[in-house]
Every structure is written in structure tokens, then in C-alpha cells.
Length: 314
Image (cartoon, rainbow, N blue to C red; front, side, top):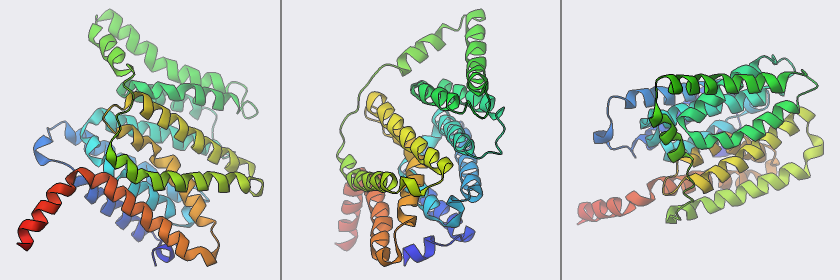
């Protein structure tokens, strides 16, 4: 049933999925913890959905069905409350912009000068969330690999990245903004990751991702060269996001939000290429993903729900 709905390109269904997931995410928010600056965070949330849906509807492969928007929306349920912090919301928005435009570079029509924009916005995202700087080696190597498109493309990206960084450094030096140095030092201090029981609900997702990786590499020769690079880039984005999560998350989970786009692309590809006789399995993956993410999102609220249910029934 669910697979039949998502296997078609229905914009109305995609909007319902997005709104439904967003509403579930907003249930995690305490209205008393919403200062005025949260409006900026909500604005980044809306802009993020705009660029994501626009990309999913433009990409030749992703726009064929609604699998990608399903996995992206459901994954994001747990992270909606973090958009109240405009810094996290802006960093997430800009990193999605960076990843999307990297994927677009696999399109021959892309302008090499866009590498400057990618470097520029990536630098700003690092200002909002400094641990994202770990993406820099991947991005620089990636643009160096596009040497055949333009010999200067790697340096264009690097100039775009350095421009806001050096500008901020100059302003901080002239105005004696020592607090910025302390802020960045504090942000890049390694915290590790503190185990939480809700992570257990992500294990089935991890297992499905492993199957998706295996499926990708088994059928790699059947894919066009640009799609191969896109999927490999998605996998590397995932790996670096997990490294950042492992090094800097502590008791927080918001770094997992940066997995949303690459995970949705890989899982959508995996489900899409299952043969019709595996429709039941596809439904299990789609519904199971929703169940796992709902448990992950609402795990700490379950005792309250159980208590309320007992009071109502008694």
C-alpha cells in the first residue's frame, strides 16, 4: 500500500509527507522555550524544505517517485526542535545547499564558477557550527577531481571558502572580538558521544543502510558515471557526518540531522531498484523506517504517554 503511493511522482503526497513529519517534530517542542529569535530558526526550517523539495523535483532520478522525500521527512522528525536555535538551523540549511550543489556538479551544464558559492556558504556554515570544518578535505579533494571541467575549479572553491573566513578574522582583530576566538575553541573541543538507549532504534536503519551500500557496489557497473560519483559522494558525506557526531555530539543528537540528505538518497535508490515481487519487503522497509524514527524521536516521552494513558483508562 505505502509502496504503491510512494512509487509515483505525486506532489500532493510529497507535501502531505513533509507537513506530517514537521507536525510530529513540532510535538517535541516546548512552547515555553521559544524566544523571539526562534523565528529565525523556523525561517531556516522553511527555507530548508524549499531547497530540498526543489532539488528532489529537479533531479532526473529522484523526481521519478516520492521515496526520497519520505526518508528525508521521516528522518527529520527528531531534529525539528533544534531549529529553534537559528545557528543550527542556518548551518543545516547551508550544508544542504553545499551538498545539493556538489551533486549538481555531476551535471555537465553546471557552471564551474558555482564552486565559489559552495566554498563561501560552506565557510559560513562552519562559522555557525565549527565542527563542520571536517567536511573541508572532502570538498577540496572533490573539486580537485573535477579538474577536467575546469583547471581552476579547486582554487575557485578555496577562494570562496577563505573569503568569509579571512574577512571575519580581520573584523575580529580590528574590533578586538576575543570572544569569537573563545567561542570557536569551545566549539571544536572533542566531547565524544554519550550512549543513549534511543540509539538502539537506529540499528535497523543502520542495517538497511549497509544493505543499500552492498546493493550499490554490486550493481555499480550498471550505473552512469555521474550517478556513481553522486552515490559515492553521498556515502562519504555520511561517513564524515558520523565522524563529526562521534567526536562532538556529547549528549546531543543534532549532528545526526546532517545525515538526512545522503541517507534519503541512498535508501530511496535501494527501495526503488527492488523488483516488483519484493513489494512486501519494500513496504516493510518504508514502514519500519517510520516506526524506528518515531520510537527514536519520542522515546523519552513514552513514560509520560503511558502515565497519561493509565489515568485516562482508570
